Length: 155
Ligand SMILES: *[C@@H]1O[C@H](CO)[C@@H](O)[C@H](O)[C@H]1NC(C)=O
Ligand SMILES: *[C@@H]1O[C@H](CO)[C@@H](O)[C@H](O)[C@H]1NC(C)=O
Image 1: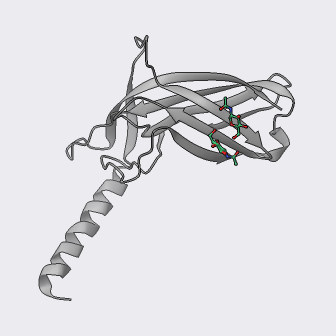
Image 2: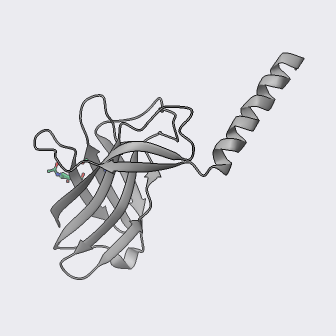
């Protein structure tokens, strides 16, 4: 390894360290005015202890973070996956991933005793899009967020 690479590695490590120590997280200006072609949960289904959920936002703006992620069924099963937003779909901090899908399908584990069966259920999720790519943003990454709701039948 020559000196140049060593210095570059050092800079990369320093950058990663600073980023980590800032606890980089998504932060949202909530959009409530959307009336057409709005982000939506297009499908969701449960297998034992696992939720399969598909979210579609709109062209060129894939889902980049989720927050306030909860489900509840009509028989009283419920689960809060998390409240504070986290980056998803290969997005991290102010870096666009190479594999940001739209629609984006993901799987989430929960206590299998809470698995809905033969019931209607609701899911609530805040989706974050268009997150700032600015390197000077600090720990809070500005995104636009939408509150989504989905009601479906689990056979
Ligand atoms: C939703 O996904 C489930 C599981 O893959 C599938 O059986 C069902 O047909 C899908 N529903 C819709 C409306 O696409
Ligand atoms: C998850 O959902 C997607 C979209 O509805 C579907 O294509 C896929 O088959 C589902 N996977 C499982 C394991 O249910």
